[in-house]
Image (cartoon, rainbow, N blue to C red):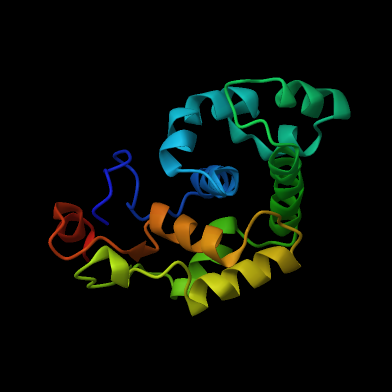
Length: 176
């Protein structure tokens, strides 16, 4: 993508469950906003959400969620905050069924990044059959704020798909 390079890990394939969970929460928070808004608040999210520890997040009380609504270091949207705690519970449920988050998510791209060869940003889709399938399955498992467009942005961010245009230096760096 020719948009400003977000951070050194953006687009690098990640199989780490903790990182994938964090990115799923951040992509949900990004819905309707620019990624730069969320990226600027990433450290605030890490502090506010206990380092994205799903065990702690799943147990957040009404008092803790109310405090999050007052925390200017994050996006103060009640539905997005509730989705984060719901997603922590869904993630833990997935783990308790014997499924690692990385295995679950990477199955939608057959375990390896999709290497696209877009020439212009206008060619880059907002969703794909893979992101639609991911969205459907995440929702089936109880996750929230995981629509097909959010899932596609997530796939781009964690390196499941290389959507940098072919003339972008990152396209070559991320090609396998």
